[in-house]
Image 1 (cartoon, rainbow, N blue to C red):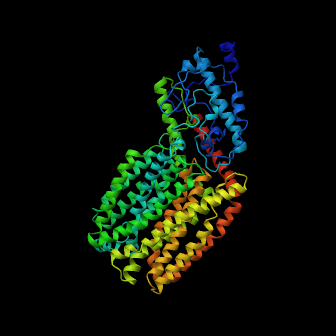
Image 2: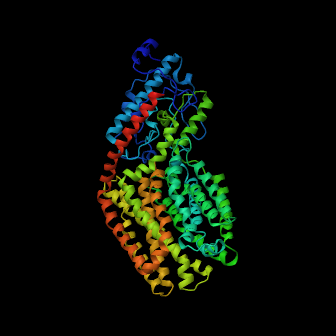
Image 3: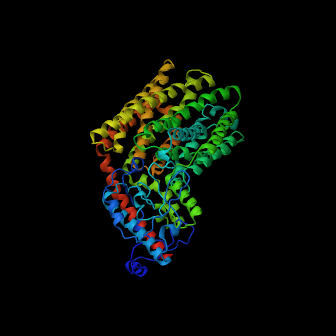
Length: 636
């Protein structure tokens, strides 16, 4: 122990508020430390390659020395406390502070927190390149690991910590990826399951309007646009995490899929499908965030490829099965058979799916350690910023995807490109029954088989573009001195800019002139092959752009994507009746060319500048929010 007296300690730290209530613990937290302008902070010590991969652009060489030089008062060496799956050294108040008086301990804690926030604030001005995604919590790169010597009550990850998701075994990661992929498969399967049965549904319910008939199929996609704005940000709360959102979602869509088979009229069918879409949209957006939790940018591409194929295969696989079901049973069994598969996936996921969101896992660890040690002041780095009123947190979290759509040009641009591709896909899908049953005279079950070429295109595209995307990413990273950038994911978008219009034109004109059925099948396969490049590269880019808030970034893009997927089928019949399949698809192809070739090249050259420009715009929004938080805290 130091020879300094308790009185000296009190005098030296008189500038700090004497508050020993740690934010996020069970103790009273009305007067927590930390100013509102210290909420959005980023740092890295570069110790763990997995941890530091969250953000790699920070100048943190002096961070350790700055933190260690802070005067946090004399401390005794804490006694090691072994916790399950970790060797974290965390113990009781007496083990950490010895015989120090309570008021001295209080001041040391306050000074530790002030030191952390001040150090991170100094890093923020120089190194934070991600102000474009404002958040109330502290997006520290390594979850506070660099402040172990400053704050002995800070709960973080250890080096090679087995509980840290990126340190899990490949087998464990693969299991979680498989479950996420299955969850993601259910929603798009549900969206198109009624497509081959639309004529039978229209006959049963007396639907004569073609747009209303298309609405029974596409209304679920509208829910995919609305739901993520609420669900995805909630999964980024350190109190909620990914697991409850994902598990609740799969059970909700099961219930409404099952109910669709019992509906008696058009209204009830549309309402149940919309509500099912609201519940089932989580996997389409939170799933990408889950993969960001598990894999760094160098190992994520393969997992993302496996995950990305599910939203593409779902709308294809489902109609193939439904065609045979409608032909041999009736349209209601389409929903009931899907519900059986949905139920099996939900049971497996509920049992085996694990939480992957690190802030949530650290929060749970801190709670467990408080119980084991009796030290209610053990906390995470995120607790330092959780002293904002909960209603304000929820509101601002839900607004994050909207702000991305409003202020981030890369999200707007790439989201628009993906949206048109997604709209074109559903435009093609809803024409299949009419084209192959009407123009080619196929039965319902055989017309369902015409979705197979698209499925083959998706599978081949996944294999090819997984290799190509990683090849270009590694090559450009090496040319840049080993420093990766999100824009290095984008070169393959140029391929899709050519392939998508080509597939649309071949499909449209071959159907117009009723050529052999293999020609429109070839066109749909080329389209599907190119579509994978759009989905895979943009999803990867949005995650790399901001791994911590990847779910919000993906949700923002999903809003565009799903709105187009919902609306395009509604005008498909009217468009093709007036323009014909040839010129209708040619018009869509021109739009695809206009977006698909110039924009990816523009992003490769100017994408980084656009991201920094968006940073400055979002900084103003953050300042306004900080001022509002400050007023709320003062009023309290």
